Length: 250
Image (tube, rainbow, N blue to C red):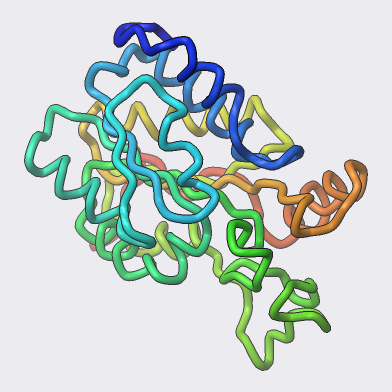
């Protein structure tokens, strides 16, 4: 991105390429978001909000106005900023815990109200920052630190289907999709549509991205991509769920 603030050389060394674990999908997602920000030339109007969790490591990734919020509260903070200054473009960046657990009520109500912000949620099926505990998106049978014998849906429920949930409650004008790090072209296409929807002022934008976490999955490179491309993609279907042109019966 451009050097409009002429950040010190030490800052670039410390924050780039990123601070995520080797093999983590956050770096890929942020790279694509950065490309979209540059291509749409929205850096001067951007406010980037990052949640607690692995997503907080993105707080100094962009040369843009950034705020780090309490866990699960990034969505309402971005809503407040957008309402205070509608000219700004607000992107809330979070993990599946921040969006589907502690922040679920904020996500759903922002979608209900068709708030003119974008929520970008990273789904890696576990709580990565705190050691790999079971998350709302942990797959049936998947082993984590708190489900050592595999997640049992009869005891803990089934994985959260975020985009499907959001698409069911948003009014016309919203954009809802799910992409994957395994398909960078698709991810960038959906990412750009989500940002453009806010630029156009049409409505709420929500993009979930299926991501990797080899550190907590305890997987090799091959196993990591097999889990992402087969197990995760088999349960969480990628695609667009709602686009601004959709018309619904009242």
